[in-house]
Image (cartoon, rainbow, N blue to C red; front, side, top):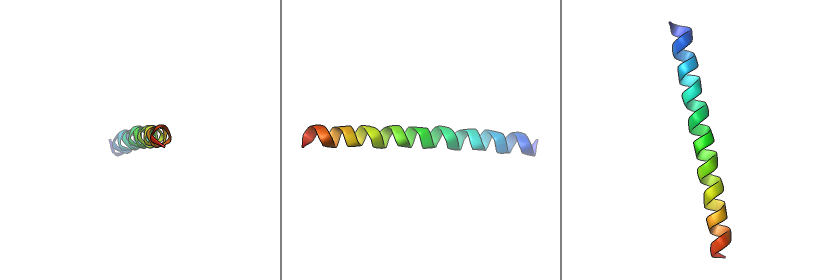
Length: 35
C-alpha cells in the first residue's frame, strides 16, 4: 500500500515537472517573438 502511494506521488511529480518545463519553454518562445 505505502509503496503504491509513493509511486503515485512520484508519477504526479514527474507529470508536474514536465508541464512546468513545457510552460517555461513556451514563455521563452513568446519572449523571443516579442523582441
